[in-house]
Amino acid sequence: MASSSAADPRLVASIRSLLAQRAEGATICPSEAARAVGGDDWRDLMQPARDAARELADQGEVEVTQRGEVVDVTTARGPVRIRRAR
Image (cartoon, rainbow, N blue to C red; front, side):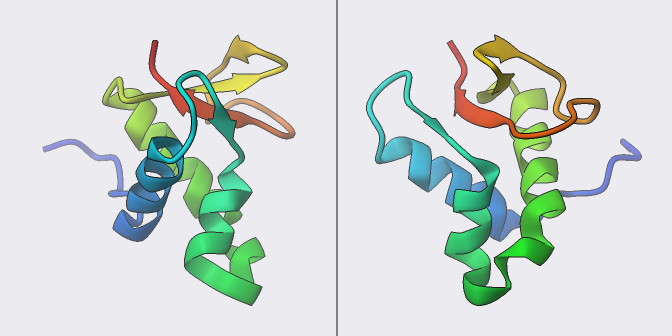
């Protein structure tokens, strides 16, 4: 069995839902998913939101970008965006 920890299913669902509401090619910020799930306590969910994005990227469902280039969210420093995989 894989050693990776499962991402928070609420955040995974939030990322999927937010992207489904956007035009093809549009991006979201992990903070949008964190805010949708955590309300006023969203900041505590930023790393879990990035973890959820990583899980979806590993599955080929999304791409994580920084300055328009696809990056590995586990090593990216600073703001990233999430988009549906192309």
